[in-house]
Image 1: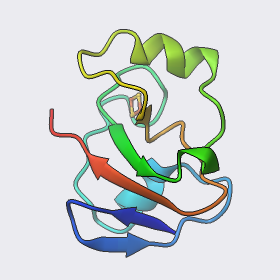
Image 2: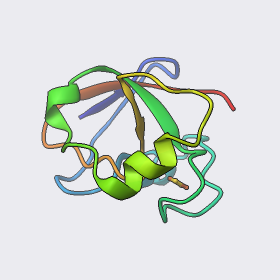
Image 3: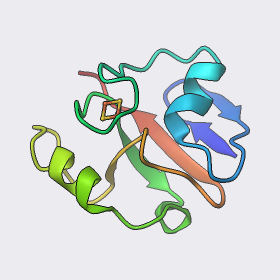
Image 4: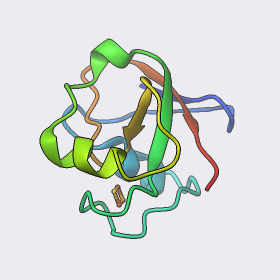
Length: 94
Ligand code: FES
């Protein structure tokens, strides 16, 4: 389950699916300039709870995260984040 704090909604996310596509399927407005190809960084989210339910950051995600202005220990790319359990996120404005 993905809980989107700033939207006040909860979304089912099939195991292994990226958060980005679960959000888009539900009609949540989130920017994804590269369409989920891990190159733009615009799909970044802040993970408020459940960071342990996401896989470790891979080299491609790390490269993109290093280029965006908004960084922090809980910032992830939603297109690369495939939760294995519950997460609570905030969609970060551009
Ligand atoms: S949609 Fe471009 S990096 Fe995620």
